[in-house]
Length: 552
Image (cartoon, rainbow, N blue to C red):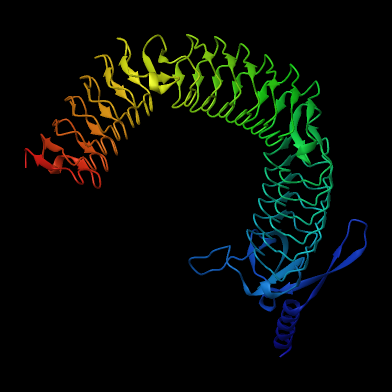
């Protein structure tokens, strides 16, 4: 009987501990602190066990098809206190993190209390909590995830704890009521777009510990004090912050070695900038759409002109590219309508797609022997260039026609050329005749697109494929041979070639792309193969006069 009473007493003690709501812990100062423990069966919040002692507040559910971006029932609350500890079954756990989209689109939420044990706030944790006005950041917090507070439009102030080391991409993007934020020493990186669109932000400090600031971090922060932002012990230039109209003349200080992505993008009042010789890297889009920038010096240490760097700099007249630069990336000078001359060094090996497209005042350009790659439309719409056929890479590659396309009438591609680049003669409406040497093995896409006056062409025996839109809308083309070396005809290759009357497709062709001969209303096609051996795209022969398969 006595043993039974003892067992009953032990069971009663266990039950009491399971129902307990408080626990006492010893603090570092020796004093006791009472902590409220919440049983998960009695709260609308959800938790996921991470370890033997920790849990994460989460939206996660056990059913299949779980979507963290759904809106749950607790989003109807305007004030929430996250417990420091929770009981799951008989065990007590510490809440250490707030999970992905835990409070996503909780429109009614005005305030939230986060316990001191939380060290990380996850991706989109409070994204679009549009009425959230206040939030406390725990002293042990080390990481704020991507888009954690994005579009929290009512948030006016936030205190970031000393423990934080990383602010994720878009973390506070679109918090347009946020006026002040203090970033503590210890933070080493701020992700791209982290504060973009914070139009009320008046001040922000960048501590010496920060070594990385992402692209467009302060984009649209129009209320910030206008200034040049340099960080990482004076070695990195983020670019201009605040009102871009105040950015007129800029001198980047000595010691800076890199200029960041989109550093001065859209600074339309910028007329001059001095870049120190120590700079070796200029980020993509660094000076994009600087409408009034007339000249710029590129230091000797720079090895690449990045994508879109000077795109849309309509007032830029001259630029000298230093020896050592090996590449000019796509769109680098696109739309620089006032650019009249450019010096290209012997070190250059590649010019990217549309790099100088729309440079209508460009009258001359020297192509060095070192150049091995020129992208499509690199000199598109450069109508002031001396009209000529451009061949490069020791005479093996044909870029196509430079300058006024109206002057492209009768073309002989020299022997030794092995490839004709994409869009090489696109839009050469006056081209009537072209001689392609037997050495050519590759014809790129869009090569003769829109050559309305071209009547005939002989494709060399070595060519293995006819690219997409290669002869699209060549409305005067009456005859063309397809050699037995060709294995594929691309999409739209001969679309709207209305004057073609007959074409023989050899047995070697195993692929004919969609719309390849679409709209060739006078064309009789003979294919030396059976349907089962050739992959034919949708509407490849639509509206053609006839199609005959010789081996069916």
